[in-house]
Length: 396
Image (cartoon, rainbow, N blue to C red):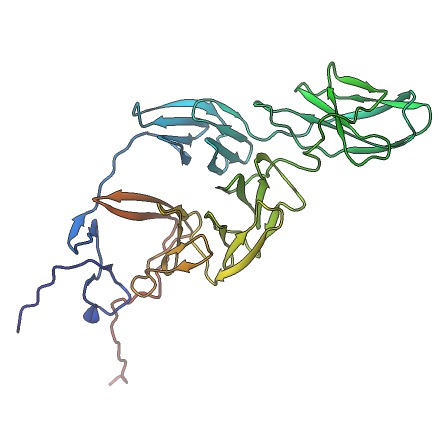
């Protein structure tokens, strides 16, 4: 019998083909080895611990730093100093989602909504203030008026508000009152007008409106609210996209602390497991895979592009701006045009679990997407396994 030598494993592992019919360039299984471009097997790169934690619940990279939440502590690891320090705190219970937008890490927890630049932690959501309108004697024109009061966040970001509408009779004016301690701004419409104009800050908890100045800044946050608690977050262009139950919600453009509760969401038959933004749109994987476009235009639309679910939390952005996530057919890779490839579909059927995480690394010039699974692994029936025949005959 002639000796057969094989020294090129460039195509990696293949567990779909039968072991005795393994195509050239494949190996049945690999443990702690990776194929190089030349076909040789290289020892898989190791890892080292850079920060310790007792209960790390989320970690988000931020330009040479990693913001992570350990229990109730918000910490930041710096690659420059190779050290981490606690920068804030949040509730120690519940899941947390995080994403980076414009140099800020946004953290959504069951009880907290925070943002940080890796140094200072600030509130993310800016709830609308409570306020009342009291009728007083005055000389405002009779008619229907709209009144709104907004609050300002740590960096001057303005809250949303639901304007109050009421009617004034002849010989009346009104006073706006609020016991909110934050900086507040009052907006009022002219009689029977649709647009609300700034009447200045609410100082001392009350402001009497005896005339309406309609030459000032207009109210632009009417009807907007903070983003609800999200189980996943991602950044797309100038807005944040999150998963809340069976909904994908998204903020208003350039306004990451506010969303439109009427138009700022999409609903799915089941809870999405992956949101993966590209330059052209966002992949949403729920009961199947959808490609959503126009989230930042006011007229979003979506089309189904793949009849396949995904492992929860397994999305990663590739260096060429494509995105990848994990399915029962292995890695799915989507580009900015809504086109998806399944490079492992014909060769490898991985075991999958209910959730996971993924990241991109490069070693010896070879980029790789590394996916880790969490929970009970389920064998993939697409793989070829060992088997035995059992024949049962009549007893003698």
